[in-house]
Image (cartoon, rainbow, N blue to C red; front, top):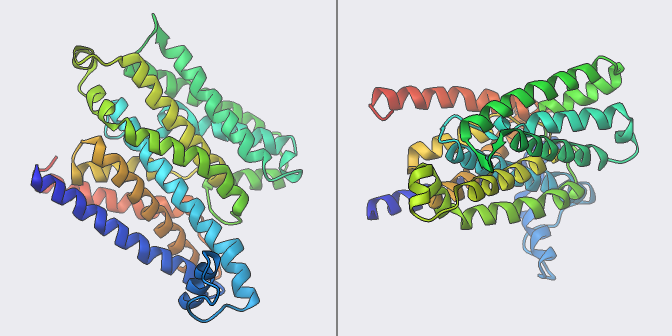
Length: 346
């Protein structure tokens, strides 16, 4: 037990250190370089130090720091934490380490909502229409899938999984059908959303995401013990006095809400909800009381790392975040699985 706690604290400390380093690098590097001491000066002034600490930034650097780099970084932290936490929950609910938030139709529903907003021309009216429609489509897809999977007031994981696959394919077909009627400009707009990215993220996106994601993740942390019981199986969970139906739907609902919120502000970013919690489960074990917080932290680190690398690797050209998460995540995931198999760990 003590060894396990030491392992959890060790990985947690390592992730915190990695996050601090990435925070500094992400703020500093880019087309316009932001001096670290200048960024510190801005932050210290904002929290009440009149004289600040460090050399002040010039007007261009200050504008880039406050209105481009910092909100982009915060959106990345929120999205990465949300997707990784939701992935860990989905893997627990479905008792499948390769499950991810997409299995309950969140991604396909969000895509349909986004393409409807683009097709109606609403994205040129206000930046809030696409996130709003994406969230509505994602949440509507989840409600539809749960409704189809429910029988005699019960929802079995395998039935839910099959319903999710069927509805996702159906919604994907509707999305493709709408795309055939779009002009080239709107097709390009949808493609950029589908690939996913944090470019042009502003404080408005932070405001949209921070409430649902912080509240949802906090509730999941508090319910981690119940998820541990649910993973044991329906019979065992009922024997321990837990309402299987209630908690399964509760976990799916919260995970779907935070995923839909993340998708609506960043577009479709794959691989985070699958790879990060799976790797953390291998490293720290299946106890969700430690797995969920470490997955949230690792998701934030992973997403900020991929976004920063995509910004600076081919400056001034930027590689979209959705591409970077796949390029960075897939090879490492395969390497880790191969190494653990060679060691007899899986």
